[in-house]
Image (cartoon, rainbow, N blue to C red):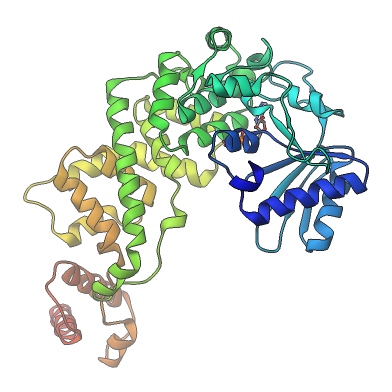
Length: 441
Ligand code: ATP
């Protein structure tokens, strides 16, 4: 299966990893999500190796012949190997973790593969494949991972699992909905139990937000939020957050605008050519899709609760700011965009200029009127790239002294271009002259 389902380069790396393990008298395994996805027929290239022995020394030895870089975390005895072409490999020392108290960061001790796998979240993530020659490709299944993959079930390994780490609640729902699996009966009962105990204040905000961001970055976050809502678990984000018809409508609209954005960004290069004076650069990789979903969640709780959530989850200032702007001003912006008579392009530009792509996409998702949506999309794809042809240098050549008048003229030229009132450089020059004559006595 490894040979048939993996790119040959990755297969070779696994072979080499096994051979090195044998030479250095350690055991090497590829584990976790990689094995799960391989057995599900959806192989990923997210490789996690576990070494029974010194994982960091092993990682350095594996990296050396390939001249790959190694980033080691001594405290956890883990390392990441980054190959010259960017391919990454996580290497960990087999370890057990002890939690001093529920939700604490664990203390770590070296151990066997068997114990290492026991600290994992769900049985489907406990599968490992041996890499040492002679045993290469053997599946190790200590906790019924294969049975649960076949039964399409998410099952924890022991009854305190969610108490140790309540972020696993989010992980359970994420895997359940991603794969179309079901929670095992006992696991479901445990999750419901955790929902009732007040662990929320003991859970670190940054760990919670990490899991929430992963969930909101999935293909279909709406299904996951709905399930969390049905299980009364949205209060982990904030006690005021509840599933509602309004939230449902918003969460259904978000993937549509995100899809549109992705498709449009692919066409960006073509579009640039067709717009007079447009500037270059695709913003695709600057946009965080999960943030648009997050904005939808924050839309249905009171403003004060938004502040509390952002503080608790310790989102970065940049992300928190975007969320605040959309929460505080989206209704007002949409009302302005819906004004009659319809706004002209230059007015749409003034309403939307300076907003983040995420906020703009959220506005599109929240807008109920198609014409308002179209105004935002026109801004995103076209208006914001438009520039006047005349520059400050041209104005100087026309004999004008630099000063506040420059800004005024350039801004009016931009409006005229957006509204289609000027086409050529000569048109702009004439308009600039008219403005100069109007303001100079
Ligand atoms: P994905 O497909 O989402 O990347 P993954 O299974 O690879 O899923 P990661 O978040 O990369 O998930 O974690 C790697 C492995 O570490 C998981 O397979 C899981 O066994 C383990 N793990 C991650 N988070 C936890 C947790 N909170 N508790 C226990 N085990 C965890």
